[in-house]
View 1 (cartoon, one colour):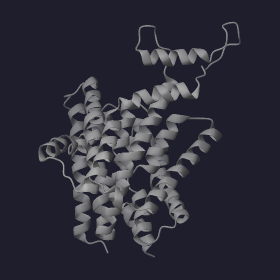
View 2 (cartoon, rainbow, N blue to C red):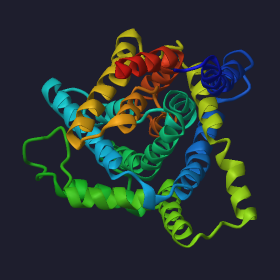
View 3 (cartoon, rainbow, N blue to C red):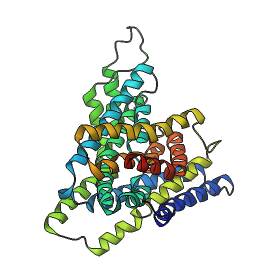
View 4 (cartoon, helix red, strand yellow):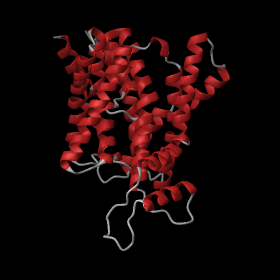
Length: 357
């Protein structure tokens, strides 16, 4: 049973996030301390420095040799089901396209496991849950955030307009690829230019290779495999250097959310209808798909319960930073984070008692 002390730890993990977000909101809305360009610069700092270092810290501290294969399989099936359902919805409705698929995946499959998840899971299922949740956090940082970046870059390549002759080589390549798919000028005009799959992937790959998060996850995985195999430890000076920047990553991300909200006409920036859809995807569809995935893989006991409850956690903070950086529905994710954390405790308790029956 969850005690009042456990509830206090959950609240203590949540309130500082709101304090950070409110300070950012007030600093722009009332105090006019930051310009739009400065707000974008803060978000870019989080995306290019804090989050990659945080990803490295998470990945390198996880023992990859003691991970639960069943949990990995269930997590993969969960994401796959969400991806297929979102594709089907966009095909049937003929609206949204890749942008809404990316946003839907962020809502359904990428919860706030690091800050809010750990105290909640520990209160509900003790230390065993913390170990399991650490593995889910590892998978998010190692696999799913990089896949999310891939989809963002893919969307950017597909929506990018033809580049002028003076632009960089990579955009020239993209323009050349687009022109190959066009018919002769005398042919019937078309509304979209065709691009072949391979050149698109090459362009996306070049962008991802230059992304700091790609380097951080790869180096983190290599170091994890080395240190847990041979018992090596990172020099203290290097470890402290990484921690200084990474520890403030999520706080700065919440600050960026507050700055973004202050730039909108309303705190509920995406409107009530989309807000209800976003919350429904997070607290209903996400756990439902994880329930199916857990049954398919055969999860049992605490492993089964942790998988379901963590899927109902509020929207993760890191996906918002990416959404803001690529300008793909950041209003939807900021609203989901704001409201999701407000209703987190009652929602998680509801799933906790439901699974205890």
